Length: 320
Image (tube, rainbow, N blue to C red; front, side, top):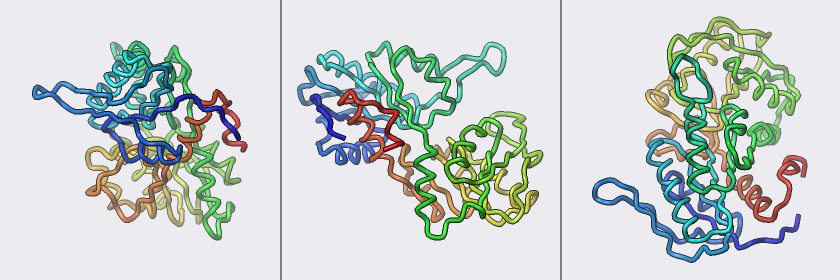
């Protein structure tokens, strides 16, 4: 597809400069000249070293750990570019932090996802480009356009390219009720059956498997989830698939490798054979396990950026 490019600029803060550089390379341009640092008292310092007047600016920043630092870097960088007379600002947020706080689960709970969306809008963001939101309803929190890329087509294409893939050998397993729609999308694209883990969560970051709904005996299991945080949900689901369901082996496909707390140890000791994740969050070397396969989302994000920059439809990306 041919695009009429505006004056395109790609900037990066500090959360994932490798991904930002890969995106710029895919687009055939250099990263914008900028620096995000700290003053001696810990306040964030942003410097933009090139003119952005009238430019279509894309700022790449996952709001992963340290979440609040990365969020503030993004907000301040947006403010700097806005005040420098950029024509349009798109926040490219591969991993959207605070997305799990999308409703009031208990009395007097905040809805932090809404607050974050308000902060981005007030800072001067004109649109958001993100990947695999925890819940797609978050798009309704935002008063500006949100381009949301789902993971299922990317993961499904990766699996189909594996030599000897036979959909009859696999079952897609949703690790909880919240993942059922995501798992169904995945299963439909692969032509596989679907099953569900019935679990309860007595407290935050703690899950207990109660039962497995669906026949997974002697199947290879594809566990699908959006976020791998402490990895308790995935590890318990994998264990239940083998011990309760009689599955052969388990593969996990996860969009965002948050890897907090004891996640690495949990995954290392789990029965999950292989974990496929996106590079929306840069995995530190000390957390990288042999069972990890990391897929680069720069090509899909760069294609989305080209379409936004050229005012072309995003809806056709999967079909072309």
